[in-house]
Length: 395
Ligand SMILES: *Cc1c(COP(=O)(O)O)cnc(C)c1O
Image 1 (cartoon, rainbow, N blue to C red):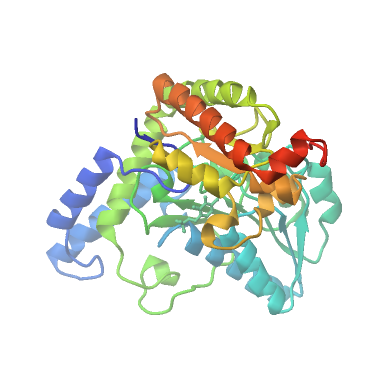
Image 2: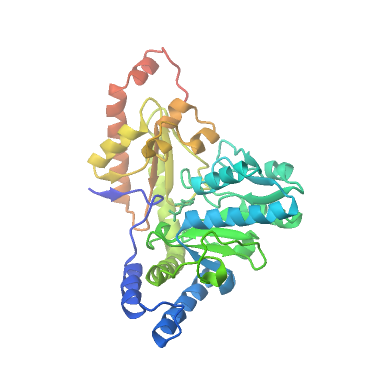
């Protein structure tokens, strides 16, 4: 059996997105900035996509800026708010310890430029407490950035309440909604956010395209200089086929959500129940306040990377959800932030289900993980020490 269970890393493109891509590339190849009819036909398609994306987010078309993806959108939101803050003498940026690196590294850059950055802790459930944010807020804060849903452990943050609090205090609020858009209803009015980032390849669109929502009046400075595209805020000829494919994918994802979410949540819970029967294992993140397709576990006494390789041999594509995969030996900052100790955080596994996952696939994954964890534990010196009482179990 082949099971792709790494949909938080990227998704397969939807058929409707592939078709929109091919059709747009063929029929609307003009440059939307050209004045002739071929260019204007492309411009019309671009406007239609902008309007459709705005409708799904419940905002105005002029508040939508097409970007090269989630990372660029996060970078631009943070750079823009920081530049505006610096002009007003606001030199503090607030975020959480579990953000995506697109946010964390952007904040790191601002820190080098003289900003103070507060990364707020989350609970062992992976959720930021509102009171923690409330205490951290002050007149010197240029931006609060809190993700809508976490990419590793799937936890959902109380973004509505966070948005309301920021609005009441007059502080700009950005949310990285890359894991949420196309999977949960997202309404920028309900979130009271000034900026929101989304990425097409997380909901069945192509890679290399995304959106920055910036509320009318929110400070916005370009990262890329050049032409006057995107109302002067993002230079470069628009990738219209990719934008059209993203739009088609987003519309379909939103339309199917009422059916897909309960179905995938039930499969997620079946997977969680099955993996919980493995001794000395633990679910990462809140069991309920999490993305429909996210299952993240730690297994004591094993290395996540070996687990992934053996699962791949059995046809299961998964992720450790940790930075180890990128060649670093540091365990995931997210798992450390929810209180997992280094040894335990190293034995992590993230399985992220797609819209078309089936019960048979879930049962296959459960059996495969049980078998592979057992095999790795039998070879593990750490596991032997745990068995012999030379070390004590944490999970
Ligand atoms: C994937 C992801 C990003 C980056 O998006 P790209 O389009 O790949 O640049 C940012 N934030 C989160 C939470 C993500 O999951």
